[in-house]
Image (tube, rainbow, N blue to C red; front, side):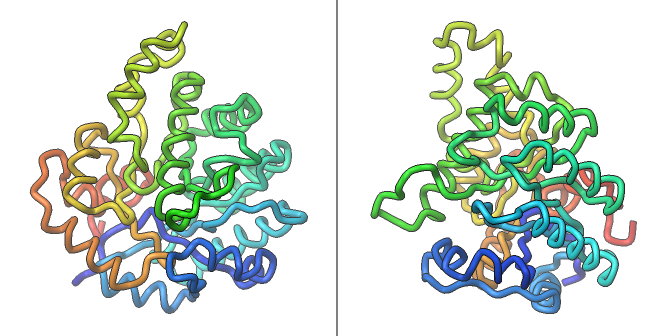
Length: 313
């Protein structure tokens, strides 16, 4: 398989980051309780096996860590080094030391002007504040000014996880839904239309709950004035397909997302190779209207990130 796909949901685990956050955090995110490992060589082998030309690197977990600005700067520099060392195989969504707004604005400037990052990864909540919270307004305004890409990734919810399933199975999709609703209901999507938000995992449960959310906004005092058409707000997001390439998930996504805003994603290395291969095959075989496979696998991400439309460009 000639590598041509662009994987917008591709994590990396710099050694310095793993040492700082510890393996327990990584193990807790996995249903099997085993922390994933990562290497550039292993990532490229996975990509070659699955027809992926380029993975857009991002750090997956967003815990409170001491001196986050220093640690994440090192992670962002390392991502830039990997981009240079393995030309054409990696891009990057840079990390920000949120909830510190001033430090994050500094990192946006540095990563844009010095590292030419493709965008930024934001987590669904920070200390229980979701992305539509006024606390994040200065950052969203700056990302809007720069027409930046913001990849939204779930993290631990600000409450205890019920003993039903691991957080990554249920709480993570719910987290994505919560912060997407926060951005819509707060009016942030209308105030900052230049930010290109990507929602992980086909939007979590947002496509399924779209009618319920739209009705609720219509019933809220001033709701429609803040949000505009709720369905248009939901269509303004980009959505990746990581761990979501099944008929039910894709059919729901196709009803909510614009055809040109569905992106391919794997969730490597948190998704193991057999799962990546399986979800890729399911996506390849789907016949659901609204899922244009060449655009999902490459075209949409190429337009969003400024890549050639075809492998050889």
